[in-house]
Length: 76
Image (cartoon, rainbow, N blue to C red):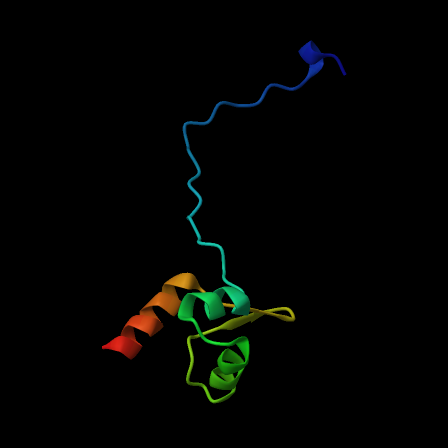
């Protein structure tokens, strides 16, 4: 197809804004941030004591904002 034969895209005045989302942390990221072993994080999760986590398929992920909030609560 030649350039001039392409259908023209309609101009849109709407701008789509996607929400900004921090990259989710792995258990190793959280371990480094909190300065605790990975095994401790797994124990806390089992006992429902540690920072909130979520499963994405077989992967365990943490929201950095929630981890920081949880850490701040532990200090207070």
